[in-house]
Length: 98
Image 1 (cartoon, rainbow, N blue to C red):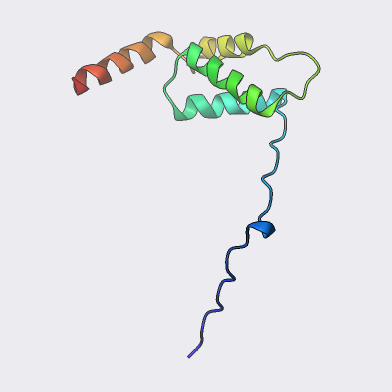
Image 2: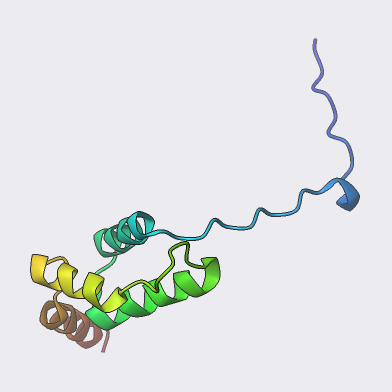
């Protein structure tokens, strides 16, 4: 019969420090916005708030500030974000819960 090797006891001194997240560039910001709207039903305001929070947490790699409003507007025009549909869906969910 074989035995599993025992795990050494936890030693906080050997713990790795968490890596600092990489700053966001324009392509990554676009990917993050697309992933967010693919996963969650959202409004234009909530998407903008999410992107601003991510930029605050991770920083920006570009020289000029990102145009979040233009990115959100592009998503609205393409149909990925629809405030009226989001509001209707949210209201129906609240009515169902009572």
